Image (cartoon, rainbow, N blue to C red; front, side, top):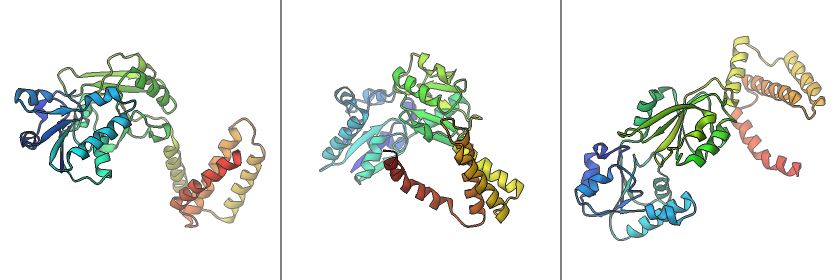
Length: 305
């Protein structure tokens, strides 16, 4: 069995009694990284450990590192119990733990304090209305401007630069973001900057993350919500008159499609309007519509070839 133990997000003061008990149980101790303030507890109490930091220098990607860590842990745990310590808590932003679970290894999860709590304290935000939790390799359609967003694994300036360009496809470049480094530690740094200025900061490290408060920026979810609200407020239904009106407008707008995008916007709105009205009549189900769209994506791609 593998005891997977959270070290907490800050220093040894975050260690739980259970974590300390497991450290001293005589099993071999492995640390994903020794770049953590709680390491002082191991050293002060002369508790032996082995870290996997050397793999970060040997491997070309984080995925390779994480897979190798899991491979070593599984091999070590074949004939004995071992302890594996991770920063924060095991089930928050710890890919090695997810990989162990996926491989159906026998593990015992011992929770710690995640880095989310000190980050929220650092930026003075309450996550009660929803917090979107992403890492730095997120795609633009992962973001939802209606929610506060926490982006992890912003290890260096290069990642921050790539992320800044991506965020400017979703948010306004003047929208504000918090850059938090060493959250909860004595040397915690919290900076509030415009999104386009993220690459100008120089002190990113393995404990850096970016927090973006919700904004007024528009995205597809907001558009869908607004369209549904309009139909409810206006109490619109799909009678023969509305059906013919939308159908004729769709035909007319489709004929005017050009390299400009104005007509495409109109046809998209009209198509969504038709689908929403059909849903109100019980003629369609959006879950089925999304399934059908997904099935047709490959066919569309083949047609475009």
